[in-house]
Length: 329
Ligand SMILES: NC(=O)c1ccc[n+]([C@@H]2O[C@H](COP(=O)([O-])OP(=O)(O)OC[C@H]3O[C@@H](n4cnc5c(N)ncnc54)[C@H](OP(=O)(O)O)[C@@H]3O)[C@@H](O)[C@H]2O)c1
Image 1 (spheres, helix red, strand yellow):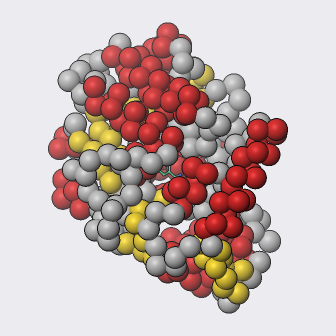
Image 2: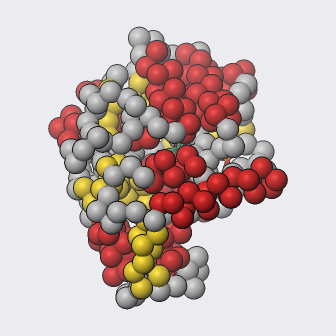
Image 3: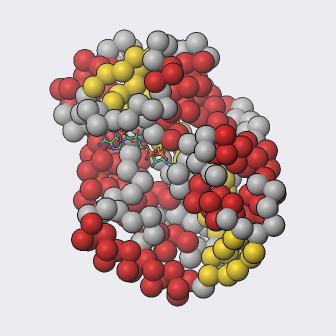
């Protein structure tokens, strides 16, 4: 396969590029002047970098020639406002697809990496599936849904597939990593109800799933959730991290109203520093949902998706990576 990856310098994209290149696929990675290549440098002889701008269709067209599959992972997961999210996650997607139309019919698949956030949480303890109506809560989720809708609008002209990960963890992740830092320091904060339910996927299972989806004719025009196949509670996740780090942390609850205050303060500070805070009112809205759960049965049935990382195995590997790479001391 001649693969073209956007977002290849990021957490998920770098694992995808690595897996494709190690499997013998020819990989082209879209980068920007400002991109940090730290996760890809070791692959440099096996992969090719191209510079182009997601907001300049003419710059994209020549980079797409001779490509079989586009994996579109570039996106913003944190942004200061709705317009910025939509600009990158929505319009950036539209521009890339417009550029892809110029290399049709060679292009065999366009994979759009969406998110569970685009569809929203489950209303109850039943994991949502692909026919659940979208009801995104946050600006991020709405912009990912916009990206999905744009992608779907081209389904009559391009073979598209949409992949929706829930919470993704694994080596190189900097978000869920924060929880590992707490546990390392001997603290186990439980935000809100410890029985809140979540779906997870290990990054290597996710990118293997994207690859399998790209190779499956059945997946054309379809959307899929990709998870580890099990629903987890927040306390189960916390205890799994503690076991992986061989810690017996002090458990304490943080009521939502405390975090609401912190989030509001962080937003005020961010207006001065012009940096997007990790915790803000939108993030709080997400955190308060009791059921961020989805079901990947459709991917299993339609293209043989088989996650190999249980939460226990994946968290253990991830903790080992953080320690080995001195992210955790
Ligand atoms: N992490 C999760 O838990 C999760 C869950 C569900 C869905 N997703 C989706 O998965 C995708 C990857 O997420 P991630 O966690 O790997 O994010 P990440 O580590 O923040 O990486 C984001 C990537 O997008 C690129 N990018 C951002 N803005 C761009 C622009 N304007 N033009 C070109 N490239 C741009 C970045 O390139 P530079 O290096 O040039 O900045 C980087 O390679 C996103 O689409 C996200 O919505 C993530």
